[in-house]
Length: 455
Image (cartoon, rainbow, N blue to C red; front, side, top):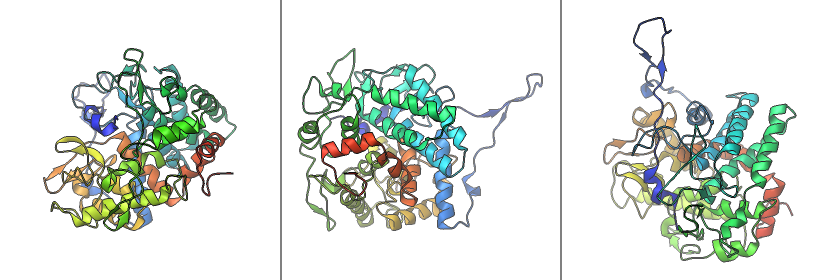
């Protein structure tokens, strides 16, 4: 199975260098915008002020650094492997759309500005490459043409598309006003949503979803989406589709299978219902649950609030135990998930521990472990901020043990910080996503129950 973190060493992007240009007639050299100085960050903050600041600063990745033509989220803030500065990410854009909704709700930008930006993204997507309505992992942010993710991953990516539509559905539920922009935005999101052929990815009617399809390579990547990982949202949306929905047996016989679905063992005195031993990278409990509300959410396989809390507790306990004796690990500095490292991109977890803490791991776990996440946030900001605080929030990873501090940011890591902190504070994105009648129908079809699932 293709996990995004196994391929993500290819993820590349260069932020444009910002210059304050003089008038053409003036023959002076360009004057560089003053560099961001983390040492000048505000220090005397209450917890609420700190949460506001971190969310708002991280949101800037999607607002200030969004692609100027498409409005979509750039894959990353630094260049690697010569991919150029036009790479935008489908899934990261879905996360960014949710961050823009948070910004509008908190009045960092106006509602009109938020709607206009998301409308710009949607209209760009309508003209971009898609395959049976499914978008590729990467697009060229200026042209809408596919940028292949790997040799044969050059077209439809169903998982990235599900991350995108998690955000778009939230936007459709949020922008309910009668202005021309909000009305048109809702309509155009609906047309995109109705056009995604989720059942095409059963590869001719099999009872499982496949991650990729390409007009050049067909089904040759052959990655079935099953076992416990970040892809629950893919099956939920596939069941929710108004025109191309999957049946429940695809969920039961496809998703809920494999060696790494059921677990049931204890790690650090915590029983883990699903997934890899020790839980795997923490993004498993983040990406699908930016919109899908896990509070009380259950089906025949698990209670998903218990699952995500258990995963978080085990990850935290491992970092506190620190069996490899890495410098800097402890109750205030924890969180292992896929991110950049001193060795390149890596899927950090208790079973793949390189001594790298990824700020998104603890901060996006705020709903599941608020006390422990807040302790980590204060440590990252007040004590390590000189090294890891930036104009776009916290950098992607750091290792005190190896004296390494990333300079990079990734859309898929920045987005969950804004969204999950907001879900902890107000439940905004959970409320929006779960208010969709299509989502409710899909959850009911798959056998989900809970307070947020309407009978």
